[in-house]
Length: 148
Image 1 (cartoon, rainbow, N blue to C red):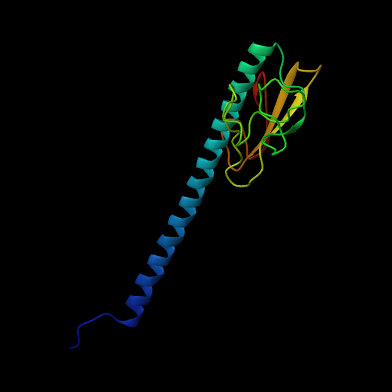
Image 2 (image 1 turned 60 degrees about the vertical axis):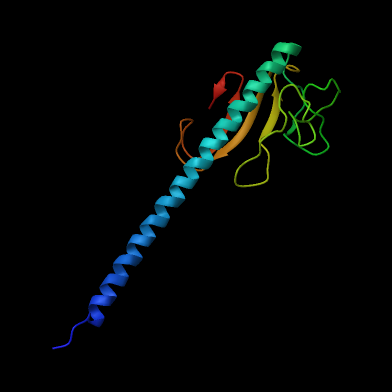
């Protein structure tokens, strides 16, 4: 009588390992998506805080409609007219934000839009990948009143 495993036993073990590996990868991807969404929400809250401080100092929100962090933009709070972002990599001296965060998946920045009368309000557009505290996956907007 020989000792060892049969071919069928080995195939069953390999199949089980394959199934467990697949489940682990799926769970890891879901965790990564949730982590990216948590970072997005944190970034938006940080930008909102900077906008509120800017509003307190200047009596209004920035008036431009632009993509945050564009290279040609001025830093928020530098006193220059026509700025298009809350800060860029070169804006380390900005009193509001040293650098505007960008989306964790793409190189795109969150979009800031002035709303209402000049400087009366704003909206920040961002997208989530999973169900989060702001709702289902997809596009969302943050305003001076909160996140939607």
